[in-house]
Each structure stands twice: as structure tokens, then as C-alpha cells.
Length: 80
Figure (spheres, rainbow, N blue to C red):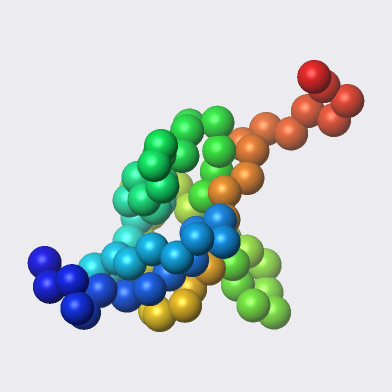
């Protein structure tokens, strides 16, 4: 892997670098330390459109500056 050609992306407001090509939801989960838990979904921000929820095995082509974020898999309004 040639680090100088890695692509900068943003996940949860933090910059990471990934190899050129594609990245899967599972690979995105593994970037932070500790990795994102199974209680969170990973989303790709789509400027001007609907964001895309990524399955662990789903691969997306990476471009510099792409933004991703995590969100709770289930939202329990009023829950503790």
C-alpha cells in the first residue's frame, strides 16, 4: 500500500486516509479507535441529495474529501 496516494476522507468530523479505489462500510467502521460498534449505522453524506446508509459489505468509490458519519441504528425517543 502506497501511503502517499491514500485518499483523505472525513468520518464523524475526523480526517482519515484510505487507499484509492473503494471502501466498504466495514472498513469505515474500523477507522476510528475504538472501532464503531454494531449499534451504529454508517452513512455517506450526499450534498444536495439523500444520504446513503452503507451496509458493512457495501463498497463505494472514494474521492478526496468525501464525508461519512455514524448514527444510532435504532432511535428510542423518550428512552433512557
